[in-house]
Image (tube, rainbow, N blue to C red; front, side, top):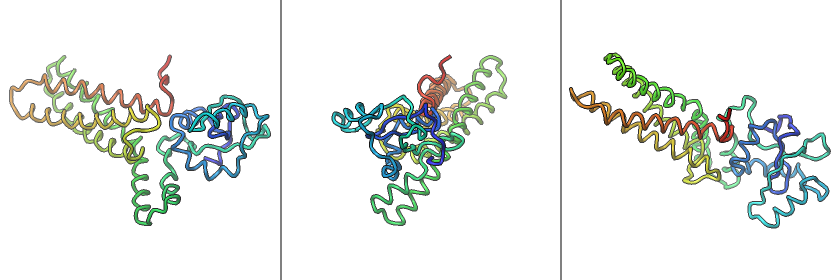
Length: 265
């Protein structure tokens, strides 16, 4: 947000202008999908003059403007306000680094520039607001689907029937949570089949696949329970694959904020 202090270590160049950030996480957010925040930057362009030829990144920026349609150059040096250069701060931060704030103001800007009707703008704001709950909702399918998998493994190991009911409860909550998280994810990320960031596209479609797969696993589980003596092999296969999907989806979700190497030792 524009009121945050810029850390001189975390800047980049976007369309010939220096963009400053408060921390590495916010810089990673911007570089993962810069067009998501470009609308907000347009409002601030008048406050940030183009890079002069004697600027440390001036030559690189000029070359990029001449050779690339996207006019995007990434920098990794110091360009803070206290260095004498005006810095436009990217709209990619909230004070607590909550990813749920990533889309703040995006719907308002889009409505303003394209002249949407008041009713359409209101619905866009409602959808955007609900989308903010996506990061919180993903905890349910991750925890509960893995919990159902653990219950099934304990059933195999101990033979105790109590784990059947435990797994069934976890699967119900996890499947419903996966469906809701997927819907909110589309609200949060926008209705795009392909995103500027391949990581976001992968996360989007893995999440959608996980929701569908969890629903199928729930149907198979209920059919297995309703038929005495039915083999649980197909249900277990569905469950194990679902656990892998939800874990992989969560990994790419975290990579949107912390990068692909966020689990590096």
